[in-house]
Image (cartoon, rainbow, N blue to C red; front, side, top):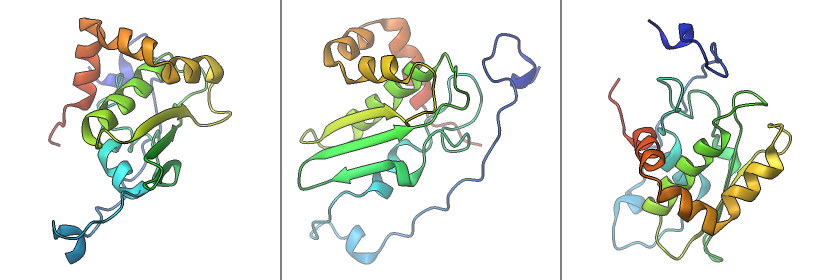
Amino acid sequence: MSVASRKGLDNSNPLVYESVSQRELTEAEQNDDVVDKFDGREVFDMIRRINDPEHPLTLEELNVVQIDHCEVDDDKNRVVVYYTPTIPHCSMATLIGLAIRVKLLRSLPERFKVDVRIYEGSHVSEAAVNKQLSDKERVAAALENDHLLNVINQCLTIHKK
């Protein structure tokens, strides 16, 4: 049975977008002696292959995450990622945000403050989801839930196509 034919999905027939090409690394980027600043593309590369919790597709393939919605201020140690759920009433919006946040917290140096937010106007519960994702205690409590952490880890597992 295909994923799209399963009952109970918020978006049983999502649009699938073409992946952005892999970035060609420069010689300087490959040289460990050269200090280069983090940029939006690097952050995008960290999160683009996160799996959607409902479909066997990545967040990039569903256009949930985009390069130009990843903002980095390396000097101020700040990363902001805006994501767009596939539908305005997506029940997985908070879970997707948590997966993005966990991936960045695991991948970026500890000096970065990470802020993950729903792209403005793209979800009916945008303010509530953003409030949950920005509340450190709520995020920590969510990550103490073994079932939820297992689901997030599944989203972060890279599957070979």
